[in-house]
Length: 161
Image 1 (spheres, rainbow, N blue to C red):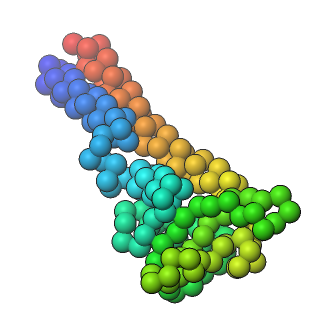
Image 2: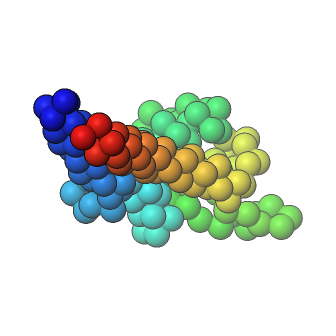
């Protein structure tokens, strides 16, 4: 009986350590380089700031997400993206601008006007933020599940003795 309780206690402790590590995973700086949600969030911040160029971390993921959300394939010569305010409409709205000529940075395509899509970027961002938050919550939830399983395993080990 002592060996079973020892195995349960040791296994429970290992699950606790693993669960705690998974809960902390989204906050670890090195993990932010590989977690999908962290990479996309970083690319989103860059795109909304100074813009994001092809080859930078998060560019490919953002391009796929925007193409899927707007249900359009970007022109093949797109090399950078940024968010800007489109004022040529009656009320103005935020849209994503695609840069299509590396030699002429003024040559850009607005998703809202030039590609015939009137979806305000703020709507897209809200949906994307929800998706990113949901993935982070899933990761943390898996960690809490492991943590709880480890605690229960240790309690059972203590009751067996």
